[in-house]
Length: 356
Image 1 (cartoon, helix red, strand yellow):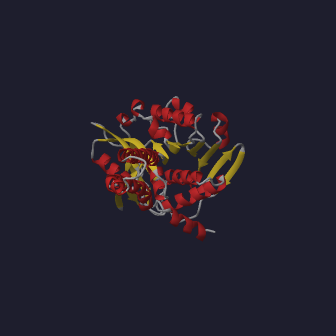
Image 2: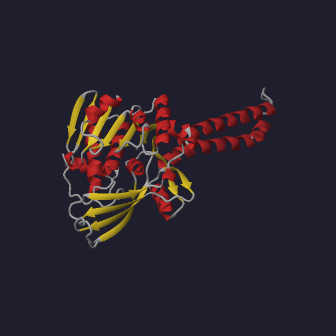
Image 3: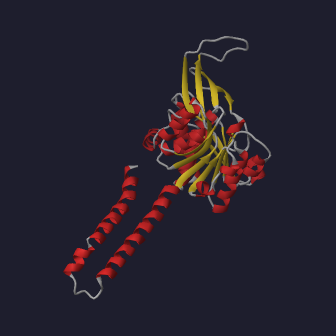
């Protein structure tokens, strides 16, 4: 961050120096009154040079500020994680061992993973005008995301109640999203989508997601999607615009069927502890998950997507991208909460080194 700031500040410093030099020009001219060029002409040229430099800096700054590694449009949520010794029986009662409130949400967590790994990320989504929404906004800013959040007056922010079985790490999720939180397609701005290197979606905000994917396709920007359900008829059109379709095993079992149906170059099915199954232009790739002590699988798939996006932007071979994604997700699973265990790049490298 500091290096990026210094790189951005240096040209401005030079521009200020040039303006200062222009102010001193009359003194220089007085000492060189026998020069062929007149004082007024030298001042005019000097200020023209400064104006040109400032314009160049303005253009460079706009590019630096607007171009980001990944932009994401989709879900954010606040999770209330209830840690129980076992899942309760119907009509039963059970005492919780602990309760934690943690930020989550598919796209928001994937982008938080990207920033932890060192990428620049832009998040687009909605929150309600309530304490949950303000907590979500604070969590996104704390991750260093560029945030484009629409606050919906009168709507409740998305929440989830997660029952986490202690000692097993598997969870059952109850969630609710106010329909008014759907991002309006008319408020989506093309420049926030195309000024990026990758677009990440979850398909939830159907109309906006479809428009974003169309813009990305027109601009030649790869589209990654994390899909676990068909939201409406437009979901099928959306998936036909996707380059990297990664679904949960609840959505499909065979990635080849999805590849045939939607024509995506790369399709993957994440299967939790059983790893993942990918197909790349008819070539099947089966990968294993890392064996780690699991405390909580909440957000593991979202984190996998964040690691996958990072690997894509490094231009790694697909097998390496998948292995890296497994590592990032495994490290998250050793902590409670969707985002609390997301590792840094240095931590992932060390994990991979120790894992051989």
